[in-house]
Image (cartoon, rainbow, N blue to C red; front, side, top):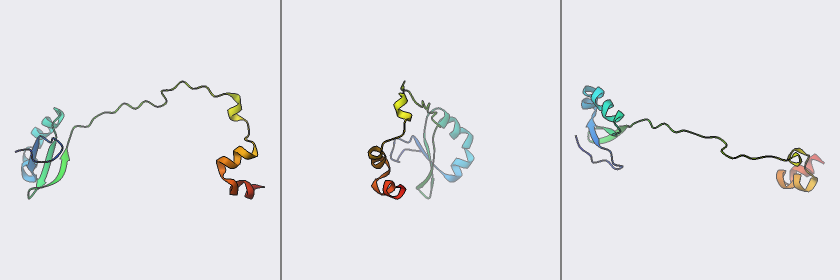
Length: 90
């Protein structure tokens, strides 16, 4: 087993070895290592830890005034929809 694959992968194994040692390889992955599975010396798959990403939606405290909800005048509407859309509506 050795490195030899770009990206700091810690171990490369062939398919048969991966099948035989899957539990051990998964323990290494849980510990943070990456594993490349190769067939005939060519990398075909990677095992790597699942990294949880905490997404925060929003994050800004924004207040919208009443004017935001008022209808747009013809000029502003044309800017948003394009002049053709306003001409077709008229």
